[in-house]
Image 1 (tube, rainbow, N blue to C red):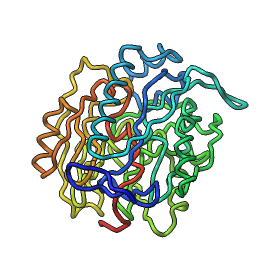
Image 2 (cartoon, helix red, strand yellow):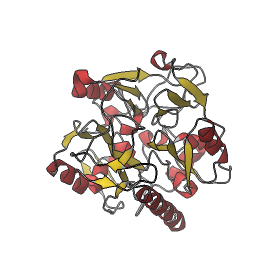
Image 3 (cartoon, one colour):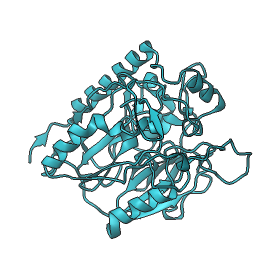
Length: 366
């Protein structure tokens, strides 16, 4: 084992390359995404379902086109700053290999071009010493893991367990082609069916032995059940229902910061899950992103999409003073980093990273 310099205490690397049980143990190694060659995907009903009507129109008009070059450059600079901050705190940072997302691929029945390699959280789930490839439901992300494969092979060669959920076929039967926005008050209806297991890794939140999952426009019941069976008796996978009109990823709704500290989006989490009612729960402050700032794929509640470096240090967007103040009120030191340009692409610090190794052991916190 070797020690990594860390201004807040020594981080000791574990013998294995992959180990992570929760969202808050001291971070030792992380994958940070890249935004190079990002493209709008071809238009499809599944792409539109999580978006607002205004965002859908942009995706329809720009389908298959590259994202604006100046926005890509600004987001790339912020990702590099994020990597530098993490490295300065003793964290090993890994990056994927750039790919051409304008290239077409497909299977009998459909073809597509790609999206980006910006959000490793969406496609890689680390549970214990295993790294799991998610069976993603967007056709534009069918081969999203390719940019990360060199890292996965390296981790495997160094002793990590590596698994991939069944690769989905993404046939038309997976999608509710007649899907439309639901009137207020009606039960959630996903754009994806139960034709085969699909999930995005970002629809799961790790609390040690307990993992919380939401069904969404990218994650179905079969996907949650596949993970439950795959992980076995060491983990308990709980499905939660949130009040989200366009659900896609749990990490801007329900975010644990440390044992006993839970951050929620109050409009989506009307009632805290029973298992978490003993935790101290605080609502995220209203976002400060101006209306004029482009957000192609998300709401402003990206301010919740923070990354814990350890229980006492949290990466926060540099201009988000209310979130910084909330962290301080909870005894957590905010680590500011400019990230608003990256936000435009559909995520923030949690989305842009996959924590590969944290120093800690498997335990129950509930």
